[in-house]
Amino acid sequence: MSLLRQIKNNQLFKTGLNYSLVGSVNSFAGMAVGLLIMRWLTPIELGLWNAVSIFQAYIPFFQLGIQSGLNRDLPVLLGKGDVESAKTLVANAKGYSLIMSFLFVFAGIFLSLYFYIVGKDLSFVLGVFTIALIAATTSQTLHLVATFRSSKSFDKLTKIMILDTIMILLLVAFIYKYHYYGILIYNGVKYTMYSLLMTYFSPYRKLKPQLKFKTLLNLSKTGLILMSFIQMRGIAQSIPRWLILYLGGVVKLGLFSPALAINGVMTMLPSQIAQFFHPQMGYKYGQTGNAKDMWPYIKKMLIIFPLLSLAVCLAFWFIAPWLLSTFFPKYTDSLWAMRIMAIAFVFSSAFTTHGVLYTIKAYKPAYLFSISELVGSFLFPYLVVHFFKSDLLASITIGLSINNFLLYILNTLILRRVLFLSKYNLS
Image (tube, rainbow, N blue to C red; front, side, top):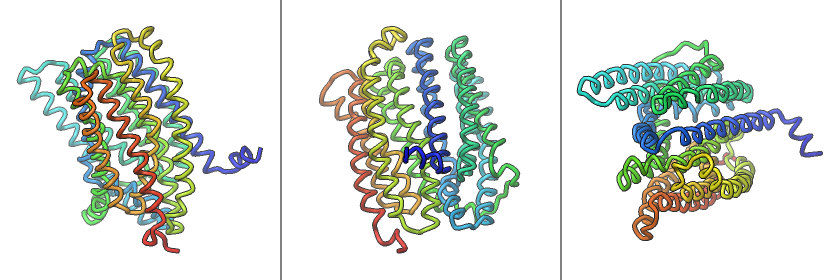
């Protein structure tokens, strides 16, 4: 009863719990759509979409670190009570994101017309335009999500995710009816509507955009370092798809879709938790200047998240054969890849907590983690494929699981040491 009473009386905890629960429902709705896609589409159709959408991983590069800088600096400024400086950063980041959105739309129209004129297949042309539209709306979302920093703002973000979940379930009808082209409609509308919802509920919606070179430069100086971490993460996540496309072709990449769906949930849940967790840690760090104050919260995350993930992994391990044989008979070759990817999910809490290194500007150990992830995403899958000569998809996922386990250990050791260093603690 004491624990329940503490939860009931702690508004921050309730907000975080509500956001995490709604985020989990949103994640599972997305996973359900992914399962339906595998039931309705052939491996060739899914392979084509996976090949086109690889380039989504490189969209954040064009932000030049500005939104990443805002994401780091805004909660710290709010923690210090410097509201005017916070508004200045938001206004300039907003102006830059709008310019990038217009450029992405223009580039999408130009490239689509060019590929259409030179005779490229319509499926490819429309795929290029959809990726450009996703890039434009993502430019807005990357900015807007950085502005949801307070507990009250996260209550609004929870409402947005509820509406997004409903929208996901409604849009899936397009995939059923139009298959590959339905995926294009689904993603184009989903990303656009999500961006519009965030714009409507934004805590800085009425703030006019600005473009001051000095402010943008200051954001970029911090943000380029943070963006390099995001970019390395995106490249690391795309490497397994490039390996499968190179070694097995489009069909194999399509057969990898069930494992990619598991990987999507594996990365989505920690990302949603981190989206709430990091601003609160940044606010606390801004108040006290002591990084060690964050360790008790991080330690709990490192223990609790793997235990919760393990329960999900075990349940999925046993129901996976029934799911494939009953609903997705075209993808039965993906059974072991799906099961092994679920194991990797257990150790994904590393990606939830290591972001506090950016908050305290501990960039050297953060680079150690990110470079290890990038190298391991290629090295371990490649070594397993090369030496064991077993099924390509299973080998790739075994390599990824090994990498995730080692990253979990490395992340724990880094955080335990760095957060207690005197240069990150004022007292």
